[in-house]
Image 1 (tube, one colour):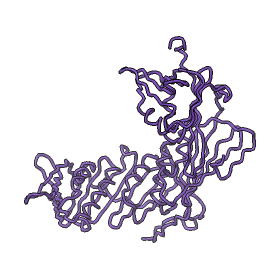
Image 2 (cartoon, one colour):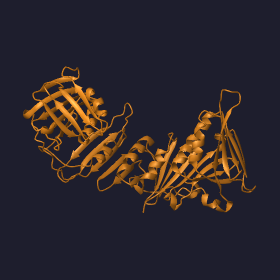
Image 3 (cartoon, helix red, strand yellow):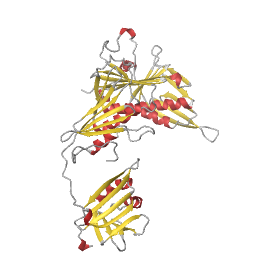
Image 4 (cartoon, one colour):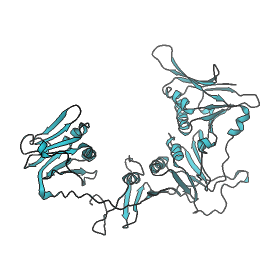
Length: 284
Length: 216
């Protein structure tokens, strides 16, 4: 098992750091899956996470100038590592004005991701700051736990409103209630609602637009002939939603959510070269 | 009422009790910092006893509706502070008091206020762990807008009761300080909002009864 990669371009580095910062806000521990073309950050839906799951993938070619990996075996040319993304995020913080960042999988005393940041210095030789981030190697027999989640048979799919507004509203609502109801219909309308003994607050978003889902392999995106005005709704943990919104450091190119009534809300956030999917289950 | 573009109350007075932090969260539902060029519109309605307070807020086409449950109003303390029974009155520019209030020795249990037609005219005193501190404002100071003191009065007030008024002081441009014969203190803060409209916050405090005039 080998892995080494290098980023030289500062813009790519900053972009990569922002993504890691976002992941760090969403998961304490997650799985990093490496293939020869892509990196995946995966959080499987365990009870410990509150049933939340995450899938983020990016093309290595868009970030790394050099990227070499050798998986566990020829037919399984992949590496699965368990890591604490906050550690990676902190290591990359030192790289804000770096000349280059090299990442390498090492196993001196225990498996680590070695992040070597080459910083400019006044003398002829560069300064190098090295961070060793402990990782766990996930054996092949467990790889099935981390399969790409399928898009659920949703009732409604709708584009999200401006994240800045959604973030403000959800943050205030978080002070008032533990759970929030998201409802939306196929007429581009979405409501966020909280209701407690003291207060009820509803925010109405209109004209959001509903994404057109091409029906691949014959599966229908939403029930044909579904009443356009009828709302699909799910009550979810407001902290999880707030975490997702607070973690967005850059406005995504596309942001939408799929609601399976009373079951789950599936968020998809796309930046040009990164796709982040986040599943929040409905509360009992 | 001039702060509002529309203001209609059908009864002579309407009173209810409401949770302030909930009200504040609802009023700031779109966030506290507004982008230049955006404004938030607010409409408030109350249908009467037993009904919730309704807030309708709109910003950029997004509408939020809040229904806040109201409660039985507490009995309002009537300090019976009458303008005709005022013994001493001064009006100060707030900037003069702001620093003083920020630096008050909080280890002192009381804030002592002396108002007099003679020196020291207007004095704020604290008695803390490190010692006592006195802050004097001369009657001919630039900050003094009005000075009408007829009698020397020294009163002590629990500092913990007065400290929260510093928030109103911070927003105000002028403050009027009045005492009556019983030593009740009235603080009136004049606050000017962004549109230049004026509103007042009034603070009443009774003197600390543990200390009597005789002891001073």
